Image (cartoon, rainbow, N blue to C red; front, side, top):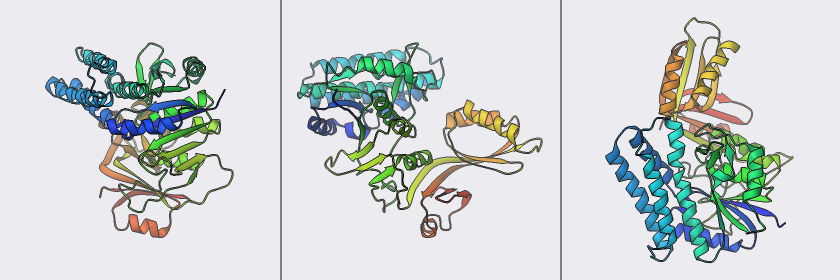
Amino acid sequence: MNPIHVFKFGGASVKSADAIRNLATIVKRYSTKNLVIVVSAMAKTTNALEEVLMHWMNGDFTALEKKLNEIEQFHISAAVELVDGNKNHVLIAELQTLFTQLKNQFSQVPSKGYDYHYDQVVSFGELLSTRIVSHYLNYIGIANSLIDARRCLRSDTSYREGVIDETTSSYLCQREFDFTSANIFLTQGFIAGTEVGTTTTLGREGSDYTAAILANLLDAQDVTIWKDVAGVLSADPKIFSNAVKLDFVSYQEAIELAYCGAQIIHPKTIKPLQNKKIPLYVKSFVEPDAPGSTIAHSDTPVKLPPVLVLKRNQVLITLTPRDFSFVIEDCLSKIFALLYKHRVKVNMVHNSAISFTVCVDDDKLRLSQALEDMKTDFVVRYNSHLELLTIRHYTPEVIENLVGNRVVYLQQRTRSTSRFVMDRQ
């Protein structure tokens, strides 16, 4: 069989009818190859559906209906434009059916918890976008088969953080992606299905992980992530004006950057690729002929410039045992059990004899519950509205330039990495 190539297109690459046309021009260049195309929700749709969910959970049905109508009109308008104004095209009917299914959920009381309902609602972003892209490709003569990711990626019921059952998913993927019947398959990123027939999501920006796990399970030759930037950059160009493209990044370096919060790739993406040494290419859908960046195995260290990662909306929490006991194994296990129970994302830790400090994402729903639980055994102090700056391959000059006289609440340095928890600028 010819080698399989996996393409992933994020929200920016399907943000409008014009963007989807551009996606099609890229796919057409590779249309004779065996392709698996993973597509995210159209830009800002995930955020919009999160708003819908909160309106439902809060019982604000006027705001819910208004926001849902905006989402529906946005998708229908883009779809109609792509099929040359034909409002009777089967695509429009299929989108309307999906919106009916989504609206039906809101006729019930949200009784199964935020995380469960999150996945059942927000997953519609990918279901809608892939339906549009698949129909448009077929419409212009690029034959493809649409696969429901929930039928080939089996996860547990860890809603919003689904854990993939690789053994079952491997069997399902081999069955669904039958390259004897077609050479282009299109599927959703970010979502998976449970054994009981519910939908899970794989964490924000989880479409990268979808592409990686599919590549692993299908023994793909490579993965290409198409983005609105030139490749893997040394910093977010929206924040840091001196960002430069990194031509090559090792798997190990990519994992470090993802862990520190770099948005270029999802933290889970690298492991399934590294396990089978599948290279990952990051390329620009604006300039598809540009070389982009390569993430792959390397036996020798690659010299890189300082790489900057800034995480906003951070909270620094300090816990002190009420009985003034030492912060040792029993105490630490209790703290991490609470963090794990509430799925609080830990980005940095520090401890002394009688205190433990942790920097976490400000997920208000999860964090508030965790803090309440912690107050039983600990005195809890925290600062919010902070930033976490990570500098990989730092130099004293870069630290001075970026940190300077800012108020630093916590800092850590190793041979290659400096991290600073600071007041928001």
